[in-house]
Image 1 (cartoon, rainbow over the protein chains, first blue to last red):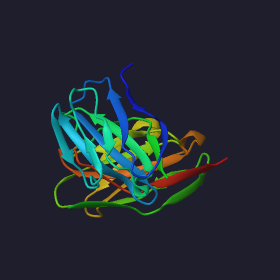
Image 2: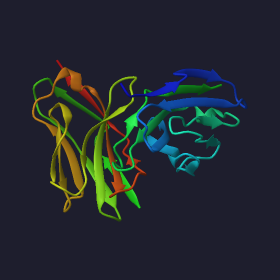
Image 3: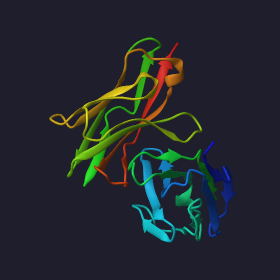
Length: 113
Length: 113
């Protein structure tokens, strides 16, 4: 079955370290997204991509970067982790013809000490 | 600009009784509206969507929602709650055809046996 997987599911790191969260989908979806979920804020968009070599900033992109070298993967990198980036991160994907109909991974819980 | 307000952060109902989760939206454009559900430690799953067709929308697991333009509301209902409905529910808005979603802060639904 097609799916979207995130790794690692849990990670603890220290302030200032670089961290990469992986996202891999097997639906061949054009669109991929990274969100963070924090209590009281719902989900907020970090970065998104509409296809290979395309990346765009979301509403909370500072301190994060992504790259899209193939259809299946959109890794999220925290260049220098900060305590404010402690959160649960969700990757999602969708087809161009069905805007808003997202398929989500199970999340990556990141703790920055 | 767009925004969504979920009027209750927590709703408790007894098993077998009706469920009502309230959502008001604001959008400068004709909106698409969605409800997503998140079970504990899981990713979000699309429950139902409104995209300018029928104003009463039916979703999975017996849920439905009605788009009321005059009231700028998109409330989620279910006639009879089941224990498996216990989860967090998110109301989501986006301009029609747009992929950049705005999430509400969520409503936690508790089912009392």
